[in-house]
Every structure is written in structure tokens, then in C-alpha cells.
Length: 90
Image (cartoon, rainbow, N blue to C red; front, side, top):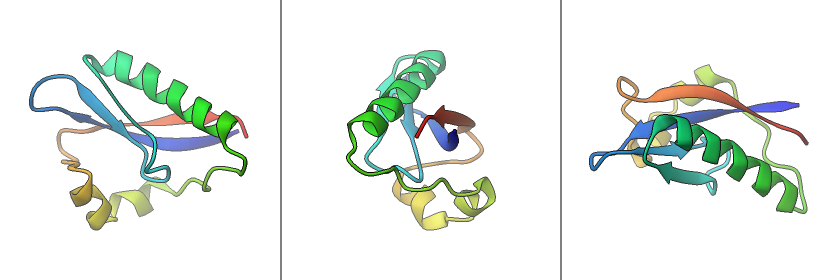
């Protein structure tokens, strides 16, 4: 089972946005962190099931963390974001 890094960013208006550095088309927003994690896991599983080809392989967190271009483009402030691993069956 693969695990993807999920980055959870607090929104200025309240709530959270989840982004997956390795799966840019998978993003969700919800009013609480718990609900955002739940919806992010469901969205990733749904995307994996609907895709006719395997998802991109996950990168190591150190590689993601050093990708300043990605973080800037996604509005990630590492000092305020929450990072977790989200499992998905292939």
C-alpha cells in the first residue's frame, strides 16, 4: 500500500485546504482539520479507483519539503501547515 504526503494548509477565512504534492489534481477544503483529512483520504481513494492508470509514485517528504516552487505555488507556509501520510491501495 502506498502512502502519499498530504499537506494541510489553514485558510485565511477559516477551515483547511488539503493538497497532495504528488497528485496535484487532488485538493479538498473543509471547515475543520479532521474533516479535511477525512475528505482528502476519500478523494485520493476515489481518484485512485477512477483512474485507468496508476497514480504517480509518492516522493519522499524531504524531497517535497525542499521543493520551494511547489510550496510557493500552493501557498504552503510550512510553519503553519500540518503534514500527514494518507494511505491508498493500488
